[in-house]
Amino acid sequence: MIDTLGKIARALSILRLPTIAVGLACAGALVIIIFTSQSHEEDRYLIPSLVGVVWAIATYIFLGSFSAVPPKPTTSWSFFRRVRRHVVRAWYGVLAIVYFTTSGFALWITSRLLSIWIRDYFG
Image (cartoon, rainbow, N blue to C red; front, side, top):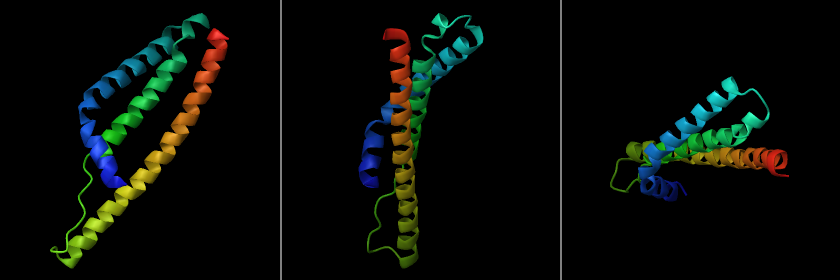
């Protein structure tokens, strides 16, 4: 599983800089809306900006964390080197579980926020 995540993260590593740009743009819009809004109508893009920040952070963390997954140890290595590699890979497994859990929570928050936003402004 973590090898697949590593391959995906390395393949998508070109998206690191655009992810930062999108995250900063959404965070900037969020700050501007919070500090300059005078009415409910001016808050129209507050929720999409928040959702954009959440997903930009999640994407950046994914790309940063899983692009350096170490390969599986070989039998020619010493015992302690193999154990160390297994421990490091187990840590990446824990990170994968945490990442999938937080991504599920982010999906739930996104669906709730966007349903509120659509109901308030389009329905």
